[in-house]
Image (cartoon, rainbow, N blue to C red; front, side, top):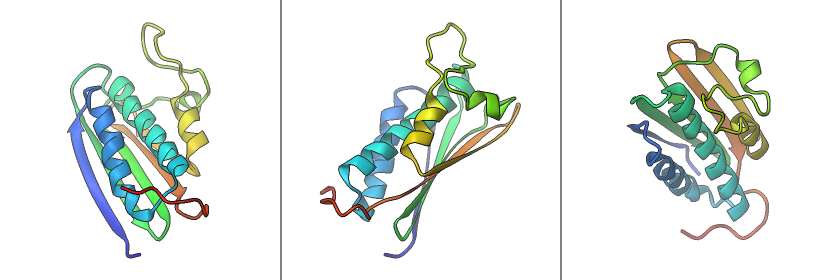
Length: 148
């Protein structure tokens, strides 16, 4: 398979989270991932997009950027915002930590991303935004591929 990539931008409103999941899943389907692999990726994308909307823009309006790169059976997905940024990335990656006011968030976003992807990297600058880059190998498990 040749390399392929795509870019997607949308407003930071919660209704677009499902759109982002579906768009990334449709793009990655060309690698013939298993259903489990596709579900893992969709869940991780959902968490990264929710992080950008809820924490990056904190209820304000901004743009969420997604880039997907396919290289052989490797997927590289970056979710970026130009929002508040993260003061302490190590603390933010701690299970149950949340910067959300009101206590309605569980603080498991990064933990979920780490669980479902092979690796994640978080780069952030306070006042300038955050980029979460996630990687996962797909289509190698020997299970039946997803038919789209």
